[in-house]
Image (cartoon, rainbow, N blue to C red; front, side, top):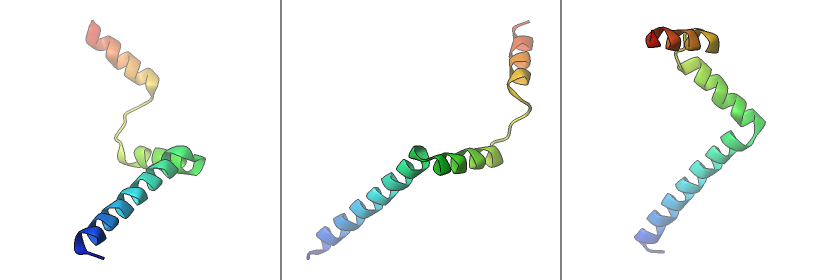
Length: 61
C-alpha cells in the first residue's frame, strides 16, 4: 500500500470517528445529557429566563 493511501485511510478513519461521536452526542439521551451538563458547567449564566426577559425590557426603556 502506498503512502498516500495510508494517509487518506487515516484521514477517513478520523473523520468517521468524529462523525460517530457527534451522532452519539446528538442522537442519544445519554449523549444529550453529557452535552447539556458540559454546557451548564462551562457556560456562564446569570439567572433564569425570567431574569433575561426583565433585563431585555430594561434596555428598551
